[in-house]
Every structure is written in C-alpha cells, then in structure tokens.
Length: 501
Image (cartoon, one colour):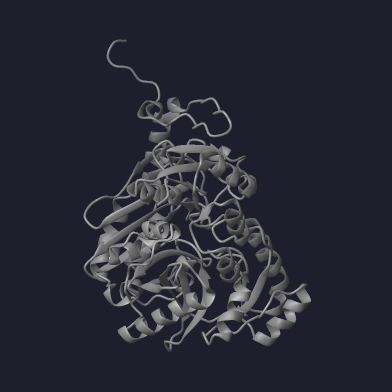
C-alpha cells in the first residue's frame, strides 16, 4: 500500500480524496494555484505545494510542475480526481515513465477511452450498440457540414478528449453548425488542452444512465449498478440518483453486463463509468467511458456500502478485486444535488466572491461533500462546483423528501447558488414520478425566475457589514512545498477581544 499520495486537483473532490486516504493511513500532498492559497483542500492536506498562477493551464494543467511536486515530496502515486488531467493519456504515460503510480487506468486504456472517436470505433467492432455518428475528427468546417448532412440533423458536437458537458453543442440546422463548432472547439481546448470534436446523432428526450465499473489488473471486472443522470442543464448533470426509475431487473442486468464488456474490450483497469443513452423504447446506446471518479460517485457508495476512493487506491496498488457480481447488492435509494456557485437570476452564470456564512445540512441519511467554509474565497478561474449534497433513504419518495428538507437547511451567503432552483426541481411532479429525461430542465424550467430575494439581500447586507473588519492581508507563502498560512478560527473571526475597553 502507498504511504503518500499527491492529489492533483482542488476543491471538494480533493478534500474527498484526502479524507479517503487518511482513512487508509496514507499521507496526502495537496497542490494549489495562487488563487487557492487559502482553500479548504490546502488546509486538509498533510503537505501543500504551490504549482503556479491562477489560470489552470499554468497550474492544475501543468504536468511538469505537478510531477516535480510529486518527486519533491516523495509521493508514490497521484490521484487526479476529476477534470483537469484526470483523463489525459499523456499525463498517465508521463507518470508511468517517472515511476509514479497514476490512480486510474493505464495509459493505453486511457488513450483509447479518452478519445471518444476511437472508443466508438472499438466498441462498434465489438458489437456494443452505439449512437450513429462520426468515425473520426475532420480537418475543416466544410467536412463537418457534409458529415452532419449524412448523419441527419439534429446532431451533437462533442469533445474527443473529455466529458462533463465541456464542448458540447446541439445543432438543429446547417446554418448553426460553423458557430457551434468554433465555440465547442474553444471550450474543449480550454478544458482539456485538445480542441478535437466529433459529431453524433442527437437523440431526442433520452435518459442518461451510467454504470459504475471496477476492474483489477488481472482483468476481473464487476459493476456497482447504475446511476440516473438525466437532470442536466447545458449538458451538465445537476441531480443524480440510484437506482434509476427507468430500469427493471432484466434491463439492469443487460446493461450491467454490457458495461463490463465495454471495459474488458478496452483493457481497462481501476474505477470507471460506462455511460449510455436510453430511449423511450428501452433501447440503450454506448455513449462514452469516463475514465475517472465521477462527481456523482457518492450515491453509489450510499446504496452499496463501498468506498470508491478506497477501491481506486487498492486497485492502483495492485490488489486483486475481491468482489463477486452476485454478492453486490443495492439497498435503498440515494440522490445527489450538485451545489454550484452560480446566479440563477442571471442565466446561471458563475458567481465568485467570499462565502460570508455557511450552514451545512446534517442528520440521518445526509452526506455533504464540500470544498468551502465560512470566510473562504470562491475564485473565478475554475469549475464553479462548491459541494455535493447527498441523501439516502429506504425508497425513492423518502429520499426525495429528505433531500428537500436538507436543501431547506442549507445556507450559503455571500455568493449566489442554485439551491432554490434545486428545491423546485425536487418538488416537480414529473421528477417525483421518476419521469426524467435530458430535456427535463428546458421543458419545465426554461422560464424559472426563483423566489423573491428581499430577505436574502437583507441578510447579506447585515453579514457583509459584520465581516468588513475581518478582511485581512496575509503575506504570500514561500514558493515550493511550504504550506500557506492556515485559516484558523481566530483569522476567520477578525478583530476581537475579551472584556475591557
């Protein structure tokens, strides 16, 4: 087993992985950009190393600095979290060359599944059902236009090098294609360092269902059942659950076997997710492999009782998979809501600034995976996810009620969030009936305006005034492996004294 792991990420997922490492008795190394000097993941790590300026390309995407940080601190392995370099085959290969274990698939499997076009070609040859679409990338817009005509509109533009909704665009007519291609390529380049995109047929009103898979280095593979991820805004998941309301026992078995077959064809090892689209006639199509830990992994943990970070680390350390498919069971129902720093009243644009007050929900069946604290700064440079709120209950309706109550108890002041929006999603009759497709948000919430904000604005004004004296100017930490000045209760409270005048 490893003694020290570097976590090449930030925010709530870095904190989550660090806590998993700590439970296994493994020391952790955090990395941070200038913008994250005082963040929670830096405070959680046993060691913290600066890897550059705020822009991700100069810090969290800087392979040289991250690998040097691992060497300097004696880290034996790197956990990538999700996003950034988590699905970058070049980075995996460089870790292998440096003798550092990458906690994820090997570089060959990563190169295959990370290239969405190649993986589609491979799966089609293996008899896996796929969505009609391109078999490769193309050199110019005119070539894409001809291909779109062959596929038939509407088509979906997708990034070849990664997922998470980055680079995705729906194109319904030829005149929209060029602008959508340019925008998709820019977004893919910024997110993954690769502007390659491809086209596939856009299936109207499908469900998005994915299967969590574990595979060891000896080729043994099992799945941990499905997650329903159909509640999406701009192709980004915002609510996930398991089990899926759409799957009966036979379909669950069939899709699970197919998911394991996908990973076997790819020569995959470690944890990964096989994503499918499910149409209204219960036909399912291979979408892609996410070669990393998913944002929504906690719902699987709650219904199976397994820690996926622990599983990742053990598999990466070379341990055999000690699970048999027939012994893995689901118990109850789990739902996750992603908490983003975003302004619901301004087209859900990212919201940065200082968190003036945070009150996390708590209680039986409630889990909160967060990356913020009262007094922290939310920067503008990265994905705006702040936390994940997850609940478990004996059945779906009880889980919905528990999630609704937990959202009521969740308070974040100082920045905008989508908490009120999520309340209305959970309350919607179609959601309660389990009638969820990927067009749920556009259909039911395209004109959502949210509740009146006067009370919140008043609270913000009071808290802002109370915190004016707490702003402090902390000296920059030295470069290298020195930890930034820690955030303490005293520094968060600001000026204070006991008694006297």
